[in-house]
Length: 475
Image 1 (cartoon, helix red, strand yellow):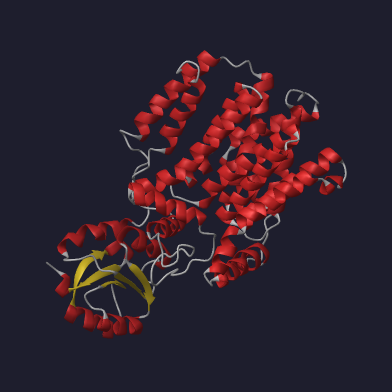
Image 2 (image 1 turned 90 degrees about the vertical axis):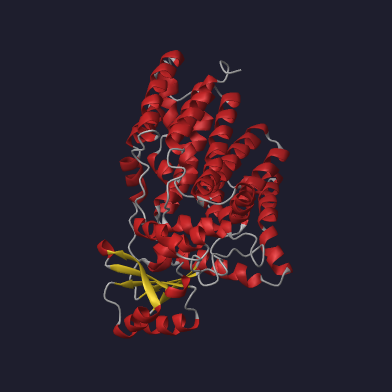
């Protein structure tokens, strides 16, 4: 069994070494805290409306709830900490390369299957984004599943597979809504290319797929309508469609080349192979599995080009199309390199051993870099009777968005962003529950009240910040 599946085992080993080394490191990017907190707090007041805390994103309507429901169920089974949150995100990446490897090895050959999956795991930005749970990891899986099912449905002319591909598209919509819509131009442009006309729009299979996708996605707005909260769906459309997709969240400058430049800078090894594959296509040397190559080229261009014209851009928006990128990059290896499986296994196994020693026992990348001051402050919580549930950032003394999700996910606290005057009113009503973050020179009136009723829990000189807790909360 091991001998027969040694290439897949090598993929698993690569995945483990490069993606699991930071599993239990403290700290996330602020979106990571938000997404983890939304999962931690499941079930919410309404199971359809995610909630971070009572003070920030009490009703989170920026994305559909499916990802957070699944994350919440995962947390209920395995607990909620940094390693559980990262593991939940990594499950989607594992499912993606497993499906990709299985499909390509059974449909084409093991060399294309292995290197498409192998190069996918070696994309640095995918490694980086795997350090916190995010919807693009799940979208990577649903996109890959949808496109592979579509290609198989198209080649086999199977209505059942068309319906399955439509359901996978619906899953993408339920995971990240508007981002799932971007699958449509990929399939549309491929159909235009192979049919050289729009007659495919008159065929039933494509409408079967489309209606199946809409039926899956409609579960969410219909469920909201049933509980009388359709306003959440309206708020979602307003934020994602009008504010982000159309309005660009207020951004005016458009850099049309940001995504190609990101791929060149971030993944030069794969970009070189990709460009080589285009050269082989130009020379008409891609004859083996040519239809599949062209399909992935159309998907890649139909995704990246429209995305490049949008105002609002993030590098992680590229994640769903990475499999098409690495599939094309694998063709030069398939066609021009004589693959010595035994030799490659020996060499890469050696690389993995060295990387394992550097990343795990030596822990070269396992240092806490984000919000170290907050975690250092938390070491002083053992002096308190109870961890304060209301965290107050006074006059922007610390980055509110950095601490907002952190306080909710790690300490089940409610973050507040208040002025000195507002803080005085708040701590008068909620003294013992309050944890107050001020500059090292707070407002005079506020400092007088803090000196009388609070004790300094932690001084953080490098941030010119002081953390205060009420004296009655000390042991």
